[in-house]
Image 1: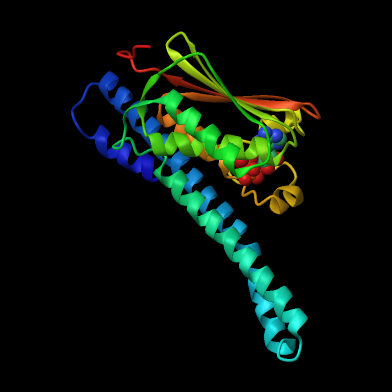
Image 2: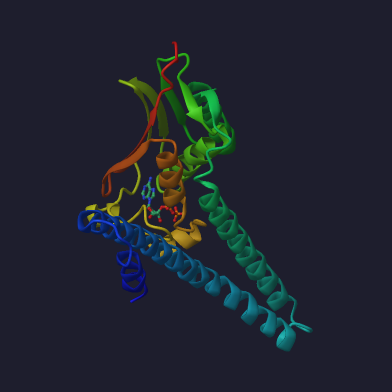
Length: 261
Ligand code: ADP
């Protein structure tokens, strides 16, 4: 109604019919775009609230339990405080990741940096943190990318973290030059993802197996953050996976034109 109302106002002007038609089309396209974005935001707020509801109600019920029966029950006290702490951790992670998602389009901080150095240091960090073979594979000395090192580090952390969470053996991080792009792959030989799920795992809050993912501390936001950051950098992220065999996630980023090996 409002859209039409505004258009009728425009038509009162002395523009030609063709011009008016063009204006109407552009205007309606803008409105559709705004509406789509607004609906996405609404959906995000509603999904985020839903995700926060569960830990909040767990915290509440444990507090009530402690109030009622905690005074002379040290076991119950211990169980409750542990549960409350772990739910608080979960909420903290959710909020931190939602902020990351909100900041993923910020391009003010972009500058040139060496992607190979980032890959190497990420592999070293994970090597130190896990008793697992973390293999770093590259033949390039340097690949210059224009972007946020911090945000792309976050992306590599998300992909490495998933590969480790959903597999038990070695994880390989490789970087190679492919045309004008740097191709970064994270490969594991773990659980894999079914074809039906592969279509959805980049959606916000989507988890393949909620209970398993909750145990492993997943929020379902990791891959949507990775995708948003990759796209803001003019890149792409793809997944190739076989259930029961393993997963390869490929992140492709444009190399800066002045880059020299
Ligand atoms: P989460 O925080 O739950 O890991 P993500 O958005 O990072 O959220 O991933 C979404 C879902 O995709 C996960 O819940 C998991 O089921 C699946 N997934 C992601 N990476 C892998 C992988 N390397 N192997 C198997 N499953 C994966």
